[in-house]
Image (tube, rainbow, N blue to C red; front, side, top):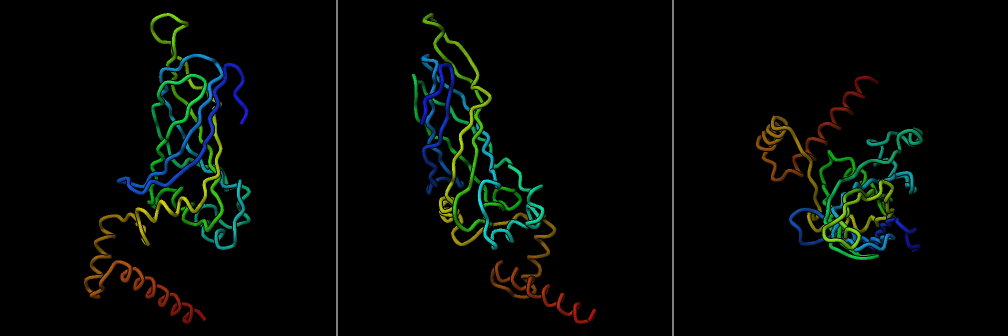
Length: 227
């Protein structure tokens, strides 16, 4: 990796791992930061926007079908397949001169109301192209005098990384083994719970499968009537 030009700051992602023991799903990115000013940096308050860039990878037929709800049919992708925000996160970096490495916690959600969760769930293999956009404040020595100087992280600081889909699947298996969840309004949840009780169904999986089966049967009956 090339060192930043004099006065510049450069970020790169060394690795991203799935954390198995956190209270909520979390990836951890290992960042390398290089500063070309030669100043002693006392601390950095760092903000990061993580964006997914879906155009930077190919998609199999099953993946295309799984992404239809997000981006429409394949013929619409030239207009709809745009980068989107996945998450925002913050960290504090301890003092260094020249370069350092630090961990950045990436809190994740498996909520299917979140676009990133739906996108990642549809992928089968390969990698997820992500961009990390950085901003924040750098606290430095003040020209050899007592006190501190302050400067901003340059607006164009960015790092790209290809997150293996297997790492995402590993994270979800740590926290939601063989399961996921969706959010329902209270009245809808009450209706589904009532249906389950009336039918004597033993699990939510069985309840949803029964509802889907009956909906498919009703659709087939309607097709027969129309024909």
